[in-house]
Amino acid sequence: MKIIRCTKENETVYAELIGEKVYPIKGLPYENVEQDGREWALSEVKLLAPCEPSKIVAVGDNYLDHIKEMNDAIPEEPVIFLKPPSAILNPGETIIYPARSSRVDYEAELALVIGKKCKNVEEKDADEYIFGYTALNDVTARDLQPIDGQWIRAKGFDTFAPFGPCINTEIDPEHTPVQSFLNDEIRQDGNSETMMRGARKILAFVSSVMTLLPGDVISLGTPKGVGPMCKGDKIEIRVGGVGSLINYVG
Ligand code: MG
Image 1 (cartoon, rainbow, N blue to C red):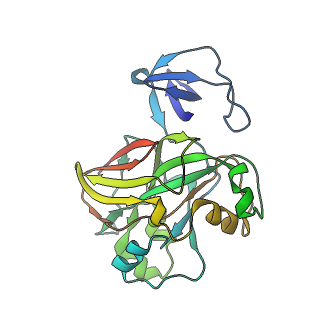
Image 2: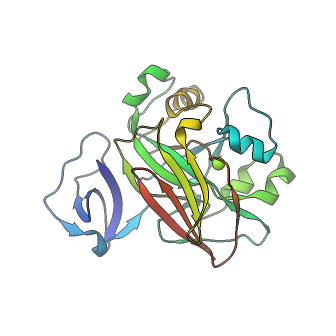
């Protein structure tokens, strides 16, 4: 099942997406998905980021090939950081290039969406708390990362967390293509099967630190091939089963 969030004529709804048809549902999608009887065309709605997280947790250095390209050390425990909800950007909208940075990178990532409040989840029980998966662009002001030593500023600017266009509840998180295309040229061509720690293990780790709520997002790291974007660029993150998350840089 694919879940989207969208607006049409000043109304915002969650909806099931089937092909090019949009079926608004009653309330939130996490406990049960019940269509309200309406049917819209996808072309009639404006897509929004597909959920409203209280927090976006992201994992750094989770693909060995990316660790090598960054000359980072292999972390003994997952390296996690937060991207604020104010960084959320809808599909199709424009990433704002901060005046303080002269290098802003794309990072194509598979991200999980929490379906049930949880704390201290065991890896074997993780699927019970995962609602589905989406695509996230962990936009990063690369030149500010080493200056600060931690990543809140480099990864926390407004518009630095585009995600969507849908949540797919049926993805196999261990075997999912994760790609990026800059101005329609492929730049990253990874697969979640090469992650050092998979979605379930990461959920267990993050939930050992903090309580997670329905709609919270955990972004699972990026494969090799990251690089800079310029004003005027089009950046597309493509995750198998989720589709294309397209944004622009301005
Ligand atoms: Mg990242």
